[in-house]
Amino acid sequence: MPMGDGTYCLGVLKSIQEAAGVGQGDSITIDIELDTAPRTVAIPIDLAQAMEGDKTAAAAWEALSYTDQKEMAGSLYGAKRRETRERRLALALETLRKPRWASGAEEGDRDSQLAGDQDRRRVKA
Image (tube, one colour):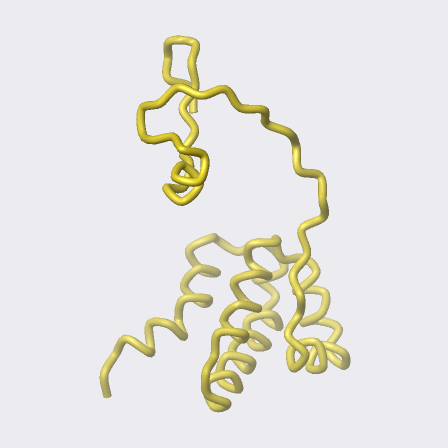
């Protein structure tokens, strides 16, 4: 981030700072290179199987950004119970089948849908 005086500030994780032997406020010289490797997400098997016969959901998945794919896949991989994973899979498919998902809905709409499952966990019955 430009600091306004011709210098730049770059946030670095504390674990990386410790490994490099530097700390907050230290001046260092770094080389930055463009990462051109493709960013892909491993599709959970159950989601991939469900999308095999569902062209709408498959097309919507392909249209998602890397971050949205990662979030959706992560919600399935993070499920500890079978029931939770099944519920999240159903929600993912429902979300992918909605035309507004693939057409670029408002960010808030997508974020609400992705966060919906997490919000339900926070509410005590």
